[in-house]
Image (cartoon, rainbow, N blue to C red; front, side):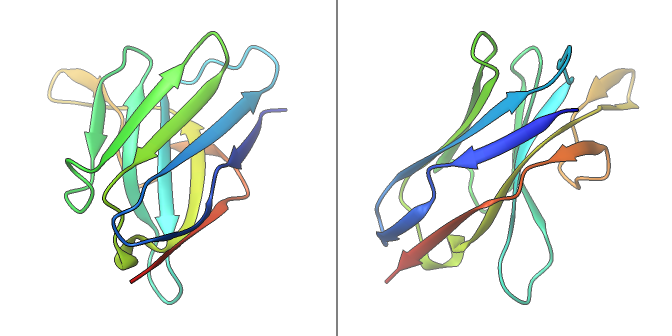
Amino acid sequence: QVQLVESGGGSVQSGGSLRLSCAASGHTFSPHCMGWFRQAPGKEREGVAVIDSDGSTSYADSVKGRFTISQDNAKNTLYLQMNSLKPEDTAMYYCAAGRSAYYSGGYYCVRDGSLMDYWGKGTLVTISS
């Protein structure tokens, strides 16, 4: 059974930074894609950033230039460095792992969450103005 456990959430003021971590465990855990998703109250889930096993990344337009996704394969840990935080970044942040989609002659991680098979329980990020 695969387990994903997020940590690092908290409350910071606008312009501040946070670093989220996601520790993964499980038998022969080696997903092609991992990612961070968020959901604010009353809003749909948003794919924030995804990364594949080779390190290729994709970001939502709303976080480009401010957030960085990375992974430490030796530690089975996924990270999300969040800088220049804004009140609209307030949400529950979820770590997920899963499969890639095949299109345009290659395999890619997608940010809609549909191919993510495993999800963590989330960590809350609150940004005050």
